[in-house]
Image 1 (tube, rainbow, N blue to C red):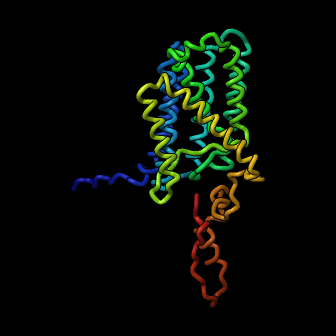
Image 2: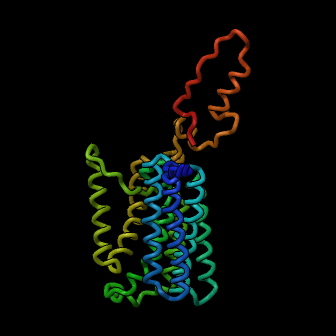
Image 3: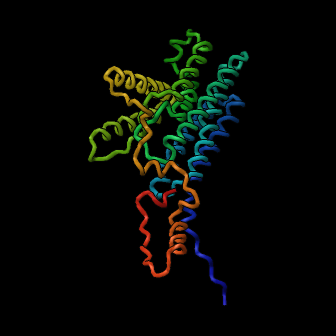
Length: 300
């Protein structure tokens, strides 16, 4: 008799899918660093942008397949620190800032702020669907720096080529660094829904931006990223004038459901462990009530 062929574990394949996108993000980050060291800033910029695409897909796939895990959240942040922290800093250093030690110091500040921003993100928003970000997202900051070289090769940039870019770019990097650890609110890529007309408008603008980048990435990518950075600043300023800014951290919810998701589950708190303990400790003759886990039990 032939041995039975083991059936593939589809559940494990689904769980590994989001982490595969995350590791693809890391691959592009490493390629971006290597390309920048060789002076290929065109491909280095594309690697950071493609890393951003992978970063968007891994979270959405994890939520769609309900395979979000603490491991995936931590892995995603570690990878983002490379692709959107170290890689853009290396691109800027090799392209513009490699004339003195000031460029090294500015690059360090940018990487340090990106890492701190990701650590705060894990505490506040890791593993949750988001409508807005608390601080400038590290992918947006990284892609802003990575697409600068593209824009510097256009005729529009040549019109302002007399500007002191070697002085201005460190200031730009420091501003982006501050915004990543600030309390400025930035919108997340919208989930388009016919029931919410506002998301249709935002979705149309998001798609139009992607089309412009595909048509002419050198001319439009960097200005669009700068517009996104400026939009968050302007929106937060207007909300502050209208006294509509949240008084506390805007993305920390008090709902029990979110607290249970953010809080690690101790072994004694696991529903199955608790159920077995109840059965062993129940006195003889006492009817054991069935254990019905609440909405917050058993979440990873």
